[in-house]
Image (cartoon, rainbow, N blue to C red; front, side, top):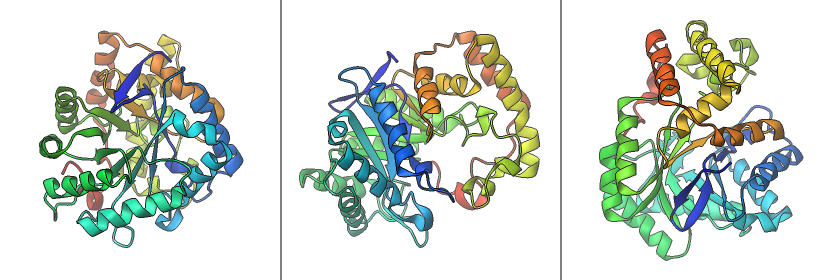
Length: 335
């Protein structure tokens, strides 16, 4: 993997590692397997390049901090890897209501809780509110986070699912290091294009989560029956019975393009996201060593303009069935 992206004073690999599904799943991954996946990704980074790892304060069953506990255990077992990673954690979410909670006391509680679970094994590199809290002016939230940085609690401010306008308002108060939005061949909305353009202008990295469409675009999931009971994807519009049948036509089209190029469908989707800008970092996740290496290798895949446009035309020609999440959750996006 040769491409890199600069975030603050760190240089990270073009492809990141999401660790949410190591713990936020009906059957959490055993620590040994999870550690192997994380270690494999870090070891694949060139000298001087850090692995961008994305976690969450509530990425555990019952919205627990199980994901942070796993990471703390990993860094305690492998202390030499702490400085080889750039750790981003989402927080500031009321786990009872799943609403953003960004007044000063909410932000401070969240950051302190994250650091408590990391147990000093790893410094929190970047903190981001999981969603924008419309009850609190964004400028006020950013000033609070700036204060917490000055207190030494973490190093950089990030944002998640923020609109271009909100991103600009926040960055005017304190530099935003990264903004996390959903990006994939079937999630490339007009607002996403605006965020990518604004971030480029302002020198902000864009972290594109779910570049594989929550696993759908890999082609490995053939039906709803392949998804385990209790899995959150069963509540997403695009994974409904109707959505599955219709949207699988997109997977079939992507697979044909990938086969022609001699790569996997997953690699094609990741490479497509990476091609959206030299400041864009695809964020796939996997618990398997082989998949981790496959995903990271996609960072070295280049798409021609013709291939990029062909994928756009494929998705637009079929038209994706369903919202990115569902009607209940859509209001929390692009705030």
